[in-house]
Image (cartoon, rainbow, N blue to C red; front, side, top):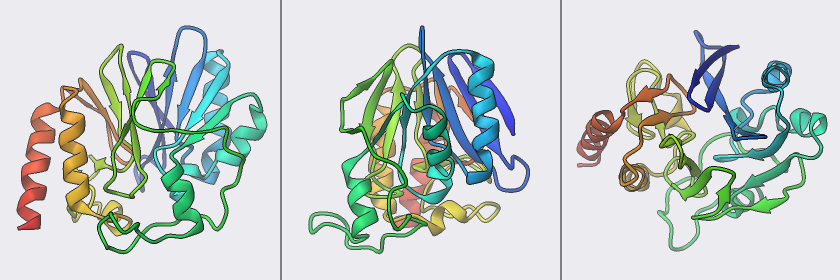
Length: 234
C-alpha cells in the first residue's frame, strides 16, 4: 500500500501500479475520519496506518457503496467499534433496489453493489452535513447516491469516483482508454458533469479521487475534464 500525505489528508492506495484503489484518512485535531475502505485485502494496512497516526478513528464515511470502496468496511468497523459509519440513504436504497428513481436519469445502475450492506449505519448523510472539518456535497453521476467531502480548512475535495485521474483526468463516464474501469461502473455522465461543476464552485485546492493520484490546484484540470465530457455528450 502506498501512502501520500497533503496537509491533513493521507491517500492510501492499494495496488498502486496495477489497479490503484484509494481511500483517505483525514486528520482533525484529536481524531481521524476514514473516507472509503478500498478492497478487502486493504484492511490490515489501513488499520496499521491508523495506528501509526495514533489518533482515534471517529468516523468511517463512504462516497458510495461499490465493492472497491466498502471492501474493508466490516473488518475496520470491527477493529474500531466506536467509529460512526455514514453513507447517503440513496446508496443504501440502491443496494436494496438498484434502479433509478422516476426523477433520475433512466439509465442502468452499474457497478458492484453488495447484496446487503455489511454493517449497521449510524447516520445517513445529506448535503451540508458536517463531519468534523468535512462538508458533505451530494455529487450524483458515477452513482445516483454518490457524495463528496470538502475539507473547509485546506479546500481539499474527496470525490470518490465522480472523477478519475488514473489514465488521465476525466469525469466518470468519459472513458479513458488507459483506465476505462470507472466508466464501466458509471450511471450517468451528464449528472457527473453537473456535479463536477458543483464542486468547482468551491474552488478546491486539492482534488482526491478514487482511482489515481491527487492533483494540487486542480481547477484548470477540472475545466478541461468538463469540456471534454461535454463533447462526449454531443
